[in-house]
Length: 635
View 1 (tube, helix red, strand yellow):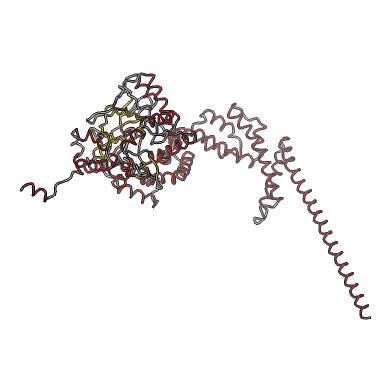
View 2 (cartoon, helix red, strand yellow):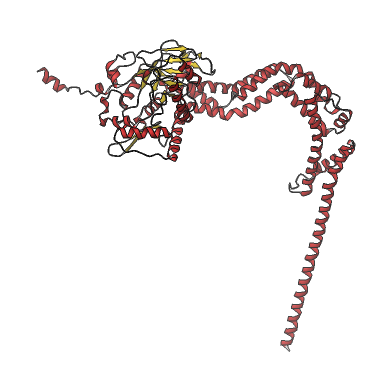
């Protein structure tokens, strides 16, 4: 019996569970059906909302029933405003309502825009229907119309709409009740706006040219002299420009400090300190700048221009006897002598205003009190193989891990030797770092380049590849083939080195593409050579205004060949001469440059510049007899 009872109980439990499952399933089905009914009802409601309001609004507008249209808009607007602020932005019905508002506003704006365009471009006088539309649509038209009239006043201030057109529009809309508060005051201020146009447009021109400081200064004057609309516009522009200018201009000033351009940094930071008087960062930077600047004066004397070639980096090759070059030690000692004798490096381009293409304006040269100006020219830094291999010069320039420009060469044992101390560029850069006052406002020197064989030791064109092949053959060295990708990579390297040099105060010059005797070359040769230089070299280093004539064989400034060079942007010319000399001509500035080498220092008097015995290795490294040897000789 027990077994039978258990079976009955088990069957009862199974039936109960099965019955409960049916009930749960039924409940779930009912819930799904109710939910579907709710969704369908909501969708129908939403479709009605979406499909009914906007079309009804548009029909009311088309039929001129503006109060009805406005009532539809306001009902939707009120629902949106009344929505619980805590409602999720994902609320679908609220999103629909907002979209309806946007659609209705767009319908009104489209019609207003058509009227505005006709008024501005065709002197259209709004019809009675137009005026009724603008009046009766109230807040939907007043806001846009008021903004349009303000924009037109701004355009008049900036010079993009003329006074008669502006007055016509204002007078045509002065009877529109919901914008009369805007038209009246602005119409009254038209004369004042007209008076301020010149200053405002000058400020905007300065702003567009990136001269933010001058723009703020001009707008500050406008704020001091005007009220009302003009004042509001000028003061808002001051706020906008200050926000735009702060970080980039402060970074520019700090970059000037890094590049030892203390005088420029002082000028810039002083202006920023006036505009941002309580800014600690600006005041701290300004203090750093002023601690490195001194009183300056206009210099009226002659300007020394010294020219050197590449330096002998590896004296073990016996090249010091050629007489054409200085060693790295001699150049370093020369810098020390010049520094001790109160010379200061200046930028060759600061003596001429090149802003106009057809004429040059002379500029007074300014230097620190007690200093004498010096221009340094590094002559023809192309690094051709015949010279570099035979005379112990560097074979090319490179950048080290810190971004410094270095010279480098391969030693006889095959070791690659690289360092700032191996070439004039790196030596001078390091010298200025140690003696910032040797450079006036970060100036370094002029590096002249030709296109023969390479630039900085890198073959950057097919023409140079051919030159390199011929040069290697001439000295009995194996040829090197250059693929297009290698040439392109070389161009990238030269571009990177150039960017560093320009950023650190160096300027570039042409030594003609083929290092030619310009004085003896005919016009066709000059034109062909210049075009190659501009196409292959200038495209890498940017606009160049200087020519360093090879061998000093210059062309007179009025010669048609010189006129051709000037027409292509070359306005500063360097010839050659023992004494300092410069002259302004017809749209050009000419300098003589003095070549400094072991030969010239040994054979000419340079006592005006320095003591040669403190420079040349032959003097400095001379063996001085010992005291004992001297005593023996006396006995």
